[in-house]
Length: 202
Ligand SMILES: [Ca+2]
Ligand SMILES: [Ca+2]
Image (cartoon, rainbow, N blue to C red; front, side):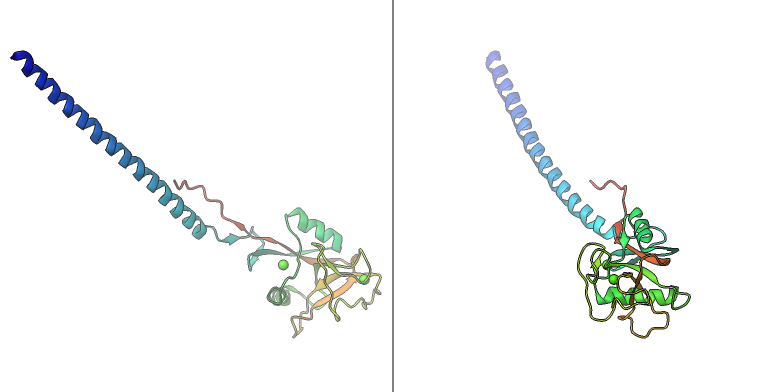
């Protein structure tokens, strides 16, 4: 009789333990799923947050415009030296890709130029092949007016593009070709960077 009682008690305890383990297993699975969901939500929120926190920005001395950074150098040097300087800073002489970019630059130059001869080098040259004007990235530019190869240096000498009309009223006609050896100020351009955040977002 006592033995039977003991067996029943042991069976009861076994059942209680099994139930306990089963409930814990369910709980464990539930927690595992919750953690996975939390990770997914964190990644989503963080990527969203990073997009909010990382607007394009430029280094000190560079101006941000349209996703690019521009450096208006006051140092006067030849076209080649100016280009080397831009490249040394991770950019290149400016390439004007749009009417909007042209107007932005022309307006800034009006403010920066001391007089009408105080122009700035841009990344345009026909030094590789006379009359074939190329941007510094190798893309072709040609327009009937400027650069016209009719500067005082003569066509074969007027191989580099400079920009700026201190008093000009037409921002779209402010490129001029001249000998690359002239000492001019220059405009560098490079893509804007983003803020490097050190915050942990997991
Ligand atoms: Ca550009
Ligand atoms: Ca030329």
